[in-house]
Length: 591
Ligand SMILES: Cc1cc2nc3c(=O)[nH]c(=O)nc-3n(C[C@H](O)[C@H](O)[C@H](O)COP(=O)(O)OP(=O)(O)OC[C@H]3O[C@@H](n4cnc5c(N)ncnc54)[C@H](O)[C@@H]3O)c2cc1C
Image (cartoon, rainbow, N blue to C red; front, top):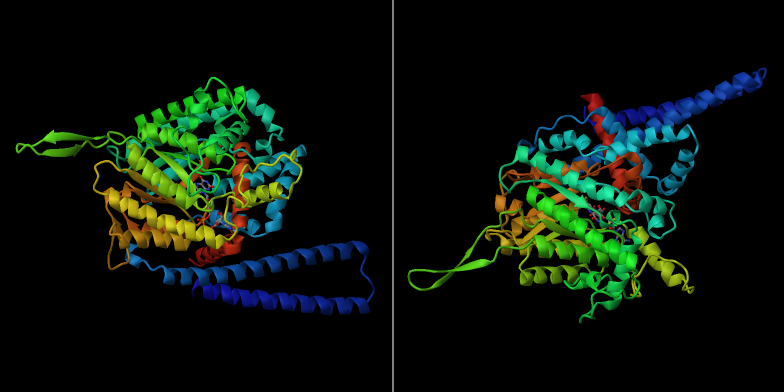
């Protein structure tokens, strides 16, 4: 019997049991009213027991309804996205405990109000002595284990090993994030950060993370190709006070020359953006301390990129809130121009006197540094086109991570706070001078921009394949099935992937060195597995973004995951994940 059929049968039974229970409850209630009333205590126990039975009955009913819907959805998904059964990889069974955890976590994420209240509830519970430990234990057993690879880089290695056995790579990140209250200068962490130099710890840990990633790759690959343990970094975590990045962003937005046609906020970076750091006089919004902090950041980034280059580990600069983006773009461009240099063609005379151009392949991984492009920002198509042209003219390889963007609700709220405030003294995070918010407000607009950028990037890759050193590298980060299928279809359409009769797309090394797809760890395992089955390449074509860090450090990341899951609820992502987990639990019990 299929899990769908079993879930249906159990569902009918649980529904009739619930009806029967309530009927017999009514009958018992009727009979008890005609006899002597029970004692207060016994009626309390009876009511409590009834409460538990009803809650368990309702819970079972919801679970079985989810399982049936999940099984139907999985069947429809497989029908819509066929991959020959012989092409599917053998996978170890997901432990039942993991499936139950997924069900619990996504059930939580399916209730928007609960997600909104969660930070407040957690803070209140953590403030009560004794309850703090219990709260942390619950968060660790659920959200932490679902979305985080471990407390340390070494803790995450077994997971990386497990994924690699499935031809899946890893984008590794020491995940300390700035939360926006702190960024606005209101948070208590502001002082402690400065005192304890948390940002320096992040820099040190990033260097360690690069070493752990490189050691792992050295054992699994030879040479500079096929290395699929990369490292992601967040610049806001590498400064003592993220306000310095915000003030640099304000400075850049107000001083960059106007371009025609104009590009929406946060505009496009220029190679001269960081000249202000060597200027003797401080101008505009920047303070002397900001300049010192940002110079130090630049030095730290040079050390980090130098280590990554020496150890053959790609570095992905994450995109963050729009009010940091002009500064993040400026630093990323600076590093790209320095570390992604493509060897120049050398001229050689032939016997017949003609001149040929020879290209020496780069001895290092290329591109080394990747910038992140958020499709929900209105500027993105123009920014991407400008970046491709600037890299070609500047002789460096362009690294692009394309995502939709994780901070949509915050961006909209920050912009409307500025727009609705006539009081200039009100502190708002948004720094956009534009009347419209920097992000699209209709999801279809972000989707259309994401998909347009996919086509443009794959065309740029097609033009580059054949060069000894890649002049472009792309990581497509998405959980959206349509976008994921579009990427695969575009690879085929543009001749970069060869489909076989099973529906499997074969991708050569020269393409796999330039194109990768990724999902966040703990999210959409069905999509990741589908892509791994659908695309065959000698090294992993699909990677998982795996953050690590101690529970207290990764809390902002975890709440962002919960909020992001909530923000995509319009698409039903969290409910789908919940229903799939329920279907798998039933299927596992049936096995
Ligand atoms: C490998 C990887 C790396 C990542 N790195 C980053 C990063 O550096 N920076 C970052 O910001 N995010 C990053 N993300 C997160 C990414 O932005 C989210 O996973 C993504 O936004 C969720 O969208 P989706 O493509 O999975 O598809 P969907 O679930 O189809 O799209 C949801 C997204 O659509 C957009 N959206 C929702 N509602 C609206 C609306 N009303 N108007 C306009 N747009 C809307 C939002 O961006 C929302 O997150 C990364 C993700 C991955 C997989």
